[in-house]
Image (cartoon, rainbow, N blue to C red):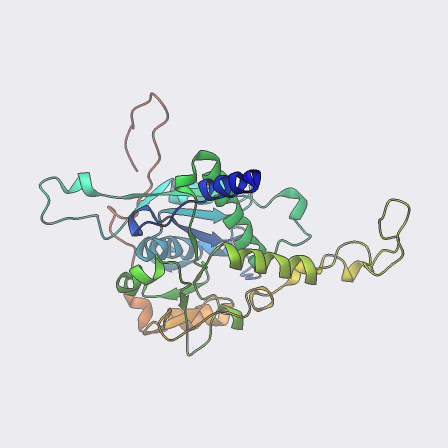
Length: 318
């Protein structure tokens, strides 16, 4: 009985207590690897411009900043990560704290949001590396790395921002308390969400992560037929046809992110919203009046910035 009580106390110690919004870690996840958008360019489609000197990936980062994310994790493979980092850098500013009118030294109150680049694990590539898996991989990478540093920086919630949708992200400011809470929060368009295969942002926690990962593992096939006889090692003996192997890599968002707990107060419907999953949808957005409202943020918010190396002064920002 004493050992059981001791085990419980250790488990409680390992759990990060939820005190208030100040120690709440909201991790932004931007999935790039595994998407099906194809414009036929040499670079990734997330670098497609939506206004002069402003790309889809930067718009997703800006959205995470308005949502109140403390860190941003971009899931992109090694072949494209250097180009994205050269364009984006290592951090972005929280737009709320860029200029504090009532502070004597406003720069001292600025809040940096670090950006990390996470590749899909080699064992998952061409097997289950769909866009939904990129979301889950970014979440588990954030959790493991943060937990290694300290239990106090473990993520409490994950905010998913897809780089293939556009809406006026500053509207998220008034909803920041709901986004940074224990309850899940969703961005809807005409009543539809990510479970309808829209690139609509949403938040999820540890319990939802386990559920979504179980869906991919159970629904997705491997190389062998799970109903085939077992050998002496307990392995299946009959291989599936090539076109039926590793089906999870073809999963849509709606195949994984299902049964969402959308209520009456845990969602927002932006005034306007555009999916940019095809060339036709991209042209529709560019020809709309709303496209004129999307502009690159102030250089104080978004500009190429790098963290200083240990013992080396910063030579400046470009």
